[in-house]
Image (cartoon, rainbow, N blue to C red; front, top):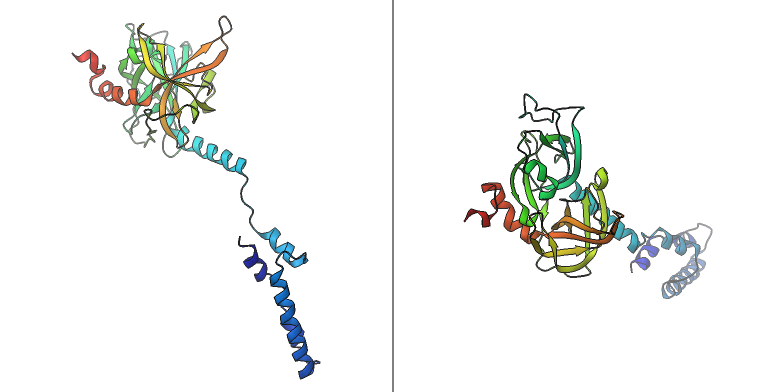
Length: 309
């Protein structure tokens, strides 16, 4: 496969055998015939042990190892998707700041951090999708002391810290939308996929901030479909994706993506062994088809479609 052509290009030139001034015309003819015969026999046996031929083979670019190709695909997948994932930090202020509309979060050493989570950039206008339970205290705050800090990067890799304002939530599906002010910056929204044609066994990847460790990637497969988990409002979320890609505290609200980098779900919950807090490896994500039906209403109206009638 290409080796014969390359080896012929690197063969030593035979013409000097017949161009010496010391060789007579008859001798030249004899050497020429021998050279031609030698060349023919060489072509008939391309796998000769000639050092020149072996060195030509060694110079050929070798096919990339399959494992290395797979690793490179995952690396590219993460590098492409991670700029669209954000880190969310919830905390409570000791007192209400005078200017609560600042673009950058106020620094308050007395602020109490109450939890962390993840989210992803929905559009270029600064809308962030996450789980309702990640920002539940902010959504139900009556004191004005609850705050949400969003750490994100723009399309050029600049790190930004912004206050997240909640503009819509749907506890029934454990979804919420935040808005951050990114005027003057360009964001990189996620690429949305579909969950209706998922198959058990296909690869999937979770990106988030477990235990506060930013930009963490875990890998796995779709372990099950059509699961049911409890929602924050006491109901049930149906049609949930089950995966063995690790989801821990802080992963909630981050994207579950497929092998093409398309979001297929929102990482939401994990079963833990009773009394240990250790994940059992049974994890769940809200299917992206449900998210796509819900989020536009949250952005426009602040409430899910079902609450408008």
